[in-house]
Image 1: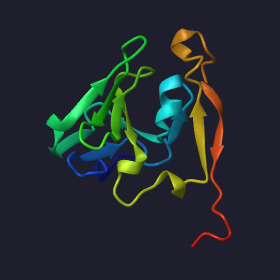
Image 2 (image 1 turned 30 degrees about the horizontal axis):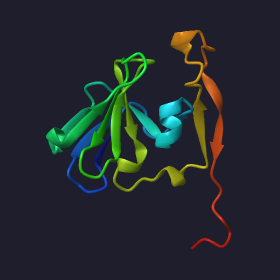
Image 3 (image 1 turned 180 degrees about the vertical axis):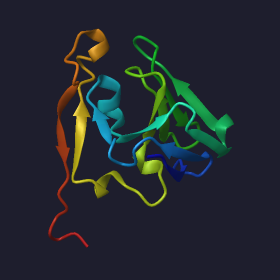
Image 4 (image 1 turned 180 degrees about the horizontal axis):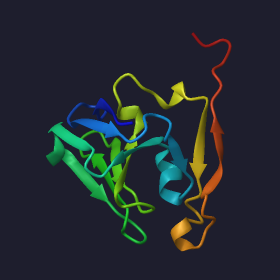
Length: 141
């Protein structure tokens, strides 16, 4: 079931709308060297599921290692907006934090994919390295 969301980078230079493949239930992290440093939670959209209202020309592309995955960032604020996946180049991973009204901290648990032993490199087919948990402090407002 496709769900559309308005989204933007931190500074607002990049504004887009994304149709998620299965809502927030696809939320994932990855433990590859790049994603570990980036720290974002991504949700899934089909390759044609993103349309830009403004700022597409403000995006910067980064590729590494095999060069299959394509990671886009706002050239002004540096926020990762989305990437074309290596595991399935017909899918996008979209930064959940860019979706208006949503936060990765709304999720109690997020599956972490094994990007260190990627399935494309002979890693386990389920590709799961672990689960990231978030529990709000009892003292938090």
